[in-house]
Image 1 (cartoon, protein in one colour):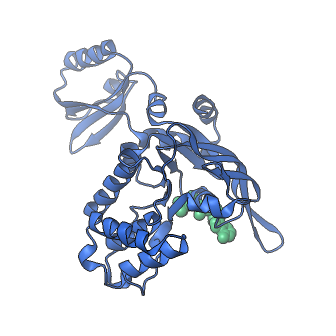
Image 2 (tube, rainbow, N blue to C red; image 1 turned 90 degrees about the vertical axis):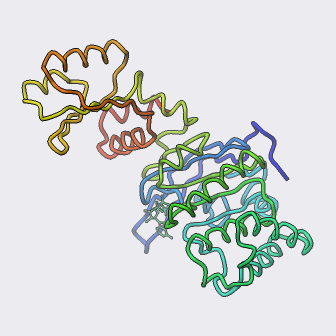
Length: 334
Ligand SMILES: Nc1ncnc2c1ncn2[C@@H]1O[C@H](COP(=O)(O)OP(=O)(O)OP(=O)(O)O)[C@@H](O)[C@H]1O
C-alpha cells in the first residue's frame, strides 16, 4: 500500500487547536494553518519548544480533534473517514509512550498488528522482517521495560510499521538516543522514504538530522508557520555567496576590526576568527589582500556549507523580536 509519487499524502486545511484551561484561559497551540505534504518525501516539521508540533502531529493521527479545519490523509478525512484515514498512518509519538512496557517486542507487534486490522499471518511475516531489519530478533521475547532507550524506540518504530502504512509520523524519533542508535534510526528513516516510497513527517530539534534527511521543511513558531519550502530553496534564502571562516594569529585592534565589516569577529585561544558570508570571489580576494596588507598571519581558512541551523535561528529570533527583518525574511520564505 504505497502512495502515488507527487500527489499530496497529507493536506491540512486551516487547522487550529485551542486548549482551554479552566473557564478563562485559552491556549492557542496551533493557529489556523495550511500544509501540504508531498507523497514519498520526508517532511521536516521544526520549531522551538511549545511551538505546536506535537499538537499538529496528534491532530493528523486523530488523537486530538482540531478546533477548526480539515486534515486529509491520502484523500481520507481524518474526522469523517477515521478508520480509512488511520489505516494510512503509522505514528511514533514522543517518548515511546505508544508501546506496552510489560509486553515483549513480539507481543507488542502482535497487539498493534491486530489493532490495525491485520491478519495474524501478515503480522508474523512483517514482524519477523522488521525485527531482523532492526537487529532485535534475538531479543524479541524480552519485555520492553528491560530494553535500552534506543531499543525501545526501534520497537516503537516497528509497531508503527506493522500494518505497512504509506504515511509515517515520527515525533522526535531520535530524542535521548546515543549516537549509534540515532544513526540507525536516521538510516531507517532515509530507507523508508527512498527505498519503500513512504511519506514521512518528522519533528526533531536536531537540525543536522533534518538537514540530512528532509526534502521539505516547515518551521512553526507559536502555532503559526514561518516557512514552508523545499530544503534547497530554504537554504538558498540565506542569500548569495558562501560562508567563510578565517583564523588569524593574534588579536585585531579596534581599528583593524573596522576593515572587515562583513564578518563576525571572535577571539579564541589568542587567535581571531573572522566568520561571515561573502557574496563573490572578489570579496574573498579583497579580504585576503587586506589581511596581508595589515601583516596579519592567516592560520587557516574554511568554506562552510549552508546550514539549516542558521536560517532556523534567523527566523525564530526574528519572529521573537517581531522586527522588520523577520517580516522581510518570512514573507520571502512563504
Ligand atoms: N493538553 C494540553 N492542555 C493544555 N495545553 C497544552 C496541551 N498540550 C499542549 N499544550 C500547549 O500547547 C502548546 C503547543 O504544545 P506542543 O506540545 O504542541 O508543542 P511542541 O512544538 O511539540 O513542543 P516540544 O518541542 O517542546 O515538544 C504549548 O504551549 C503547550 O503548553
